[in-house]
Length: 234
Image (cartoon, helix red, strand yellow):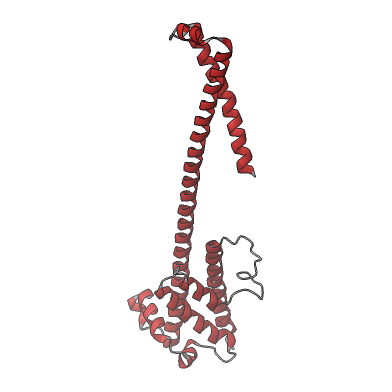
C-alpha cells in the first residue's frame, strides 16, 4: 500500500474541504466553528454535498464544479480502496486521465515532458488540479467577502438615510413646539396691541422672542432625541 501517496492526497483533500466549509460559513454567516453542518462533527455535510450546494446557489462555476468532482472521484479511489496505489490504477477504474494530462501539459516545461513516465505525468496533473482548485476557491471566497461588504455598506447607507429623515422630523417638530411655547409666553406677557407696536428687528421684544425660541428649541430637541432613543432601544 502506497501510504505516502495516499497521505499526500488526503492532505490536499482536507485543505480543499476546509476552503469549501469556510466559503459556506461566510455565505451563511456562521461564526461558530463547532457548528453541526460545516465542522468536524459527524453531522457535517459531506465533501460532495458542499460542492453541490455551492454549485446550486451559483457560487462556483461549472468548470470549477467539474474539477472538484474529478478531484473527489480520484481521492475516493485512493482513500477508500486498499489496493489503489497508483494513478494508473485509478484510471483503469474511472477514466480521468484526459483532464490530468491536460493539466500536466499546461503546467510542465516542454523540455521535461518526455522525460517523465505516464504515472509521473498523472501525478503532476493531479497536483496541478489540486492547486488550481485551491486558487479558484480563494478567488471565490474573496468575491463573496467583497459581495458581503457591499451589502453591508448598502444597509449602512439606507440606515443613515432613514435616520437622517427621522432627525429632520425631530428637528421640525422641536422647532414647531418651540415657536408655540414662545408664542404662549409672549401672549401671557403682552397684549396683542403692545405686541404689534413693539415688534421690530432691533427691539428688545424681538431679541426676547429670538432667545425664547432658541431656548425652547434646545429644550424640545433634547426631549425629542430622548424620545427617539427610547423608541429605538425598545
